[in-house]
Length: 319
Length: 289
Image 1: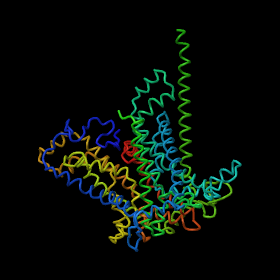
Image 2: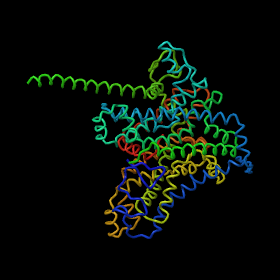
Image 3: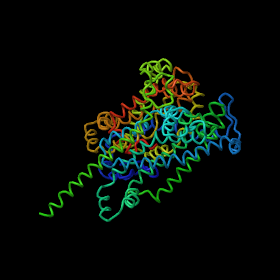
Image 4: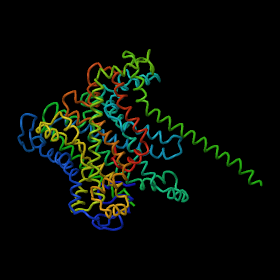
């Protein structure tokens, strides 16, 4: 396995054959034959310029625009911290932070737990295991919009889920007209859609554990729980860390599910930060204010990411 | 002798127990997979129902008649043909350009040494953790100022520079033995020649996986097309479907037919390339979800 280490990119996990750059060692790192040193720049330049112009600069520009009252046609005036003061008093914004926090708090653990459990289950002997894996992967690679439209049908008041509840004698549930249930549906479709992907990343992590280690722990009398906590978890921790960091980043930016299934409703109960940002910018034409929302979202994500990078030394084991 | 007699039935019991365990485990796993895929199965059957039978008192998979014509109706009703063509063209262009850019970048990182390489590589890694969708406002504003909003150029170009593709290819290129490179150099091959004639053919499997991911990335993309495209003749499938769902009085059977036609190509691609996809995702080549 060869994960990019998010904290120390020069090293890749379990890829000892590659010496760190700057210290030519071994046959892979021998001095290149021919070609002046600027040649490398020529090759990296298209990607680097694109990365700078379309990824890095917009991030910086977003931070700057947050201090302006920019609109689409009305030009841009800098207004200092006014947008941020307004955000603190904006009940819609505060609501969207709460809604998204709940989403992240439920979605991420559920996603990781189910991915991990399924990955471990699929390690056992199952006929047609590869096809099951493919079935779980399909929604993750399909358009979120189509998946969301499907769930919107399933959870209609007279949809198939309530029909099934009626068939076993239960009352119908107002899935999309009750705020809490609507958020539950949005979380549900998100987990359904995405866990198959993380399941495969974690499955590859499990595959890299040597069977000898498991066998040895068995001989030493470790039970299944002990084996999971002391052997499996530490050995799969790089994959677990990697998926968690990127899943958290994605979760804070949830948009399409809420847009398609509920449009943020009922009563803003599924209004995620990204959806509120979108409406502020492109429905209400307040690009400056929307950029302030973006800045807060950026800071939230940065804090979560840095916190995880800092915390990984306590539980992630790279061998 | 007696030992053997005692052991033999024990062994066979154990074997039988194992076979039963295997069968039970397999059945359980397939049941879970079936429940998991129920939404898609239901979508398929809904797409074949008459419009007034989509909702009913009881669960029934098949309506009073099986209307394959719903697929044709979806084609005209949402102008699915146009959406499909747009999505295909945009995805094809995106894929081709992504492959070229990622190959050049990965080659520089993997096989060339130049001043500042580690710093640039670090920059690429940092962008992996940048929340890209957060920056849509200035991106939109930039294209709008350049009078490029509502063009396919603006739709396609920001998606071409994700760092994951370059990482995947770099990983494969690092594994190519240096001897091949030296041999090519000694034969007088230029750096460009080395890339085209030696490196690219050797990383073809990685290129095809990257192609699939670039294609699906474009195929599934929603937020950016929603923002940058205004005229409906440029819309891609997700925009069409989203617009369809927010109209009042949704014709569910047609919407589900459209969803089916959107997901079906994904199913085919995943089924065909499953081994390569699983390997690439497992390597963390495209992040987590």
